[in-house]
Length: 248
Length: 355
Image (cartoon, helix red, strand yellow):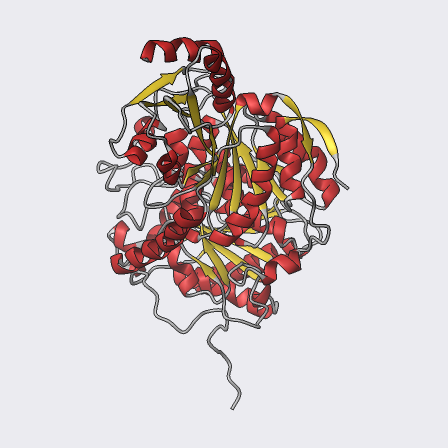
């Protein structure tokens, strides 16, 4: 009998510490599947961030290092200088990338660093227990915006794809969503294109994953998927912002 | 054959790093160390190395963290406020046990302070500076030649102890010129050769070994304690192996000075002037600030009545001087701060008042 689906070789046979319904597992798997299909698990070096996914190295079967909060793009920059042919990627959440690490991600894009960044946007700080993130929506309730985010007090959501796609060095920028099988298949294609950009040394590749955090949103996973589609997609439209001609 | 050159401090420091095998440098402009960054941008590519101007000191130290975790030999430089920004990364590097040599061309503080020479980073470099339990291994050069030699040796020590090594120079050493003999260079530099000595480095597992994971997070308290104790076994070894100092005229000395870096040169001149006045003085010059050379103080003669710490700060090293003396002798301070320098004349005058 022919197996039609097998456990991804890039994922270690281990239960994750993520909460029920969390989409980190899907994002992890997509990245590892793409590297497996390219035969590049042995060439990959990942950087895990401060946040829920700090322990991503327990699940991804590739060389990995933990970075200080927000600094993954700087760490990746250093790694890529030593191993220019490695498949280097950062995996970062919204607090890590768009708040404390805003300078590092913008300058990595400005320099056209030849690594991939996978950005998990779930509009909240997960690990610390549900505080306002830079991507928290207007009116969204969090533990630090109990009346809902008021732009007059705490500003507006950071739209990273829109910002980074303005920069010449960011040659591939796409926003995807992990809320349906069809969208997950599209997300995998985006991951694959991002690694192709790196393989061809074309510049910086950035994929934003709209994700859910059922526990801190206070919603059941299925309701959280609906909330993502109804609320997040309006502020963070799912689309390809930039794709170089060399990549299909 | 030995090559002699007349070199500016900051350029000599950069050259020493290259000769010592550094091939990765991440810099951010800050006075009085800019010539290091400029020199590295010009010269490092000629040796097959990589120069990058980072967007901040925070980014620079984290780039160094990545390059070191990937097995590269990394050099970075900054000055006092920049080092404050690097503390996060230095704590991280000590935690992940990755080598790097950091040059701090110290200036006046606190705050933005000024760009004149200073030694008020003593606490910042010897007492951790970042969060948690760790040490930097700290060398304090008194001449450009000594700084070059310490930088070259620093790479070996950083590799041996898998820990950051810091060279505490100051603005005077960075900006002045002196004749130097160039350290010899390892001509057969190869990343492959270096990687063989670093089995922990991130290279991609090539499907030939288990994945390498470089960690700084230990959520279980038992595991973090175990990790810290393991790091401190190296520090215990460092305390036995690394302390280094110079002693001058301790025999029959009435007063013994303790001074490091450029300040020790002013003290040596003051000692000559005092000799003419019939006052016998000696000097202990720590070459390592951490580990501090406590055993140097066992060499103090019975003739000595007082120990004087001479520093360009409000008195920071004086704490280590007192810890080393364990109350055996009174300790005084002769100091200037805020970028002001101690002249030999001022040292003589203030010493005579202490007698």
